[in-house]
Amino acid sequence: MSNNIKHIGLVCRTPPYGSSRARELIDIALAAGVFDQKVCLIFLGDGVLQLQSEQSPISIEQKNHGKLIDMLEIYGIENIVVQESAMRSRNLKREEISSDFQILDDTSISAIISKQHVMMSL
Amino acid sequence: MPTLHLINKSPLSNPALGECLKVCGSGDAIILLEDGVYAALNTQKISNELTVYAIEDDCSARGLTPEKINPAAQLIDYDRFVDLSCEFHNCLNWS
Image (tube, rainbow over all chains, first blue to last red; front, side):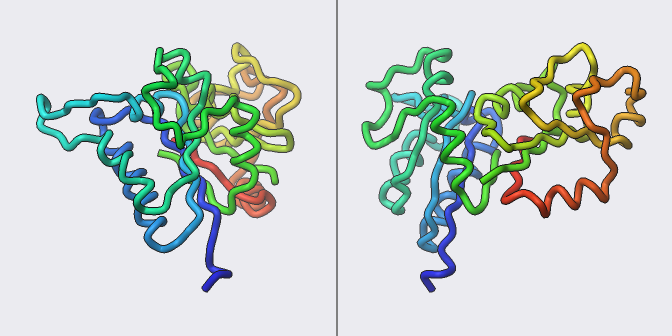
């Protein structure tokens, strides 16, 4: 089965809660992880807002997106990339983000995209 | 390996094109379609290091006649769109 393994790049560009896009892309990542695919999750632009610590969506009666992000590692998704410039413009601190995530500049992210077999963005 | 980026939102109201350009690699190309064709207006800047295509049908539907379009953007039809989709290693849709 090893020849069926693909490098799948998933680009997260939407903030959580406002739409179902953020949640659906993470669901795709988890599903791909279950099938042993090599998933690379890339948080770009407003997508980095999904990583905001201390989310408490009980007030808007939604499930905690931050908890979903915490589950990625359990599903074997270890390749998680965050756009540094997007973090900076949204005042997101390095300390708020799991130390397992790679914080990279635009050029490095471009190089990662070029290495994927399949790309998808939501 | 080069990627073909698809943009279908106006750059004036949606960050898709801006986010795409930040991570565009050398050899990559962009196809502007649907409302994305507004990025081909000659009021918008297009880097000469990039290959940019715009779907002609979407341009003419929106009244973007060739003289209103930045000469750096190449007008293409759907057949060429299909050919390009096959030529590139993969496609990334920024919808």
